Length: 144
Image (cartoon, rainbow, N blue to C red; front, side, top):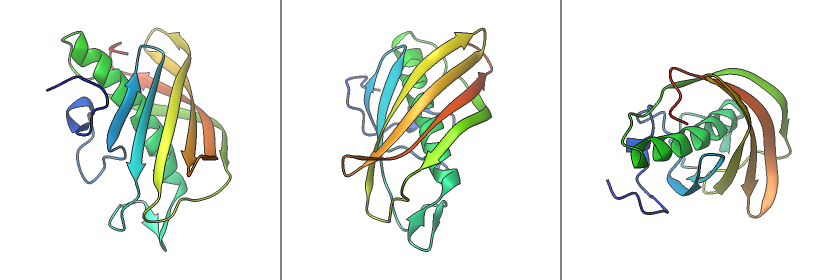
């Protein structure tokens, strides 16, 4: 896999597989942050009545973190780590993206204790923030 950013085929960086992949490109990644995109398609499993729902937004934030972790694992010749959302705090949705919209999301690591990460995520659509949250992610091992 070519690890030159941006990466438009992120499946190798994620433990998830279609149809549950909620990122389509990795724009940036380092050990403390990552940026991903997702274009909302009509056949996305989280689209309801033409809009991307709450669960999809949360999963997109989590997978933005996972793509960054997968990238860091790959550049260090390690396996992709499986993570689990343990808790969500201060989840705010300002607007729901529609089919055809392109999301650009930034995730930052706020803290890290053993195999638990606290991340913050901000989702933007058309340059405007549409969602944000703090998320606790438990990993099977520390590849992040």
